[in-house]
Image (tube, rainbow, N blue to C red):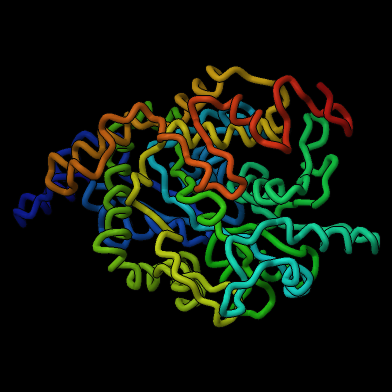
Length: 455
């Protein structure tokens, strides 16, 4: 295939800057996995806009049944890389669940998730939520409004069940964060009990993203945290109400990543650089000119081979708005961010936040030093690969130098308290101090022993 491309380039004299590196590609036929969510968009755009082909990469995109199948596919080599939950490379690398050294040279997006409750739960919550002058609910909505609902369920002897997509997903940690910020204990994990429901006020369980609305409608769960378009789908179907977006929970929080095995990146450095170039270009296209390409992106994502939801449902969030109740459409221009705010740069501080949440809820059972958090982050997140790809795009005239954080040490400035729903600032350079500042969750040398927190 390399020879074919070079022949075409020679005969047409249309060689792009990327074609100069074709002979150096270690592997040019690649298969990437994804889950049917709007934040897989950089992969679809890189394919549909020809950015992979520009790099000499012949890519096949394959939807996966769930996050575990996706991760296993990358580990066993059936997939060369994948759209991943940010927690997956970290968890695999430290041996939580499946053990494998997975790395990421590219963060796929910021924000993009929401928490939705059933109509029944919303009706019970609504009297406890302040209203604006026009009668609509005041946002952001605190989980404190859910406390009397949980008490009512408990009085009837009924558990309050909520869904999230995977134990190490952003959705699990965001749902737990929102609940804990409202004084609700979402439960702990231990090495012997991986349900995450030890000492829980609310019982969280795994549901694949596309199945969330149907599971809510069936009454199996009373709410969920998921990415789009599955919150907006609940509104369209008339079965639920999103109560908060993760932008309101933690402004411009990190979301998915693109994951590969460390072995793949070591054996295929030029291929890794090429695919990172293509993904950066796709992210730029998604955000350029104040999201001018989002309608076209919606049309791409609506296809059955990608997300396969109605374009109107996908557009609800992808084009800068979000609908809470029917007719309550609000401007959220940064609900989906793919490039601006250095969204694609793999920050160590983002990785450390995920690790702190694993420790907070017992998935990391013992206390770790600040240095340990940093070492794990640096072994998984690869800004060196990212910046090499970005520099080559700048050199080729395909990107602007000012759009990349060349001088970053891998750590964002601390997230201010005003940007997080519980009013607690986050500094990735001080993970243990951050854990100490959170009112609910493991601290210091604490550990879950049986059904108790000790230490």
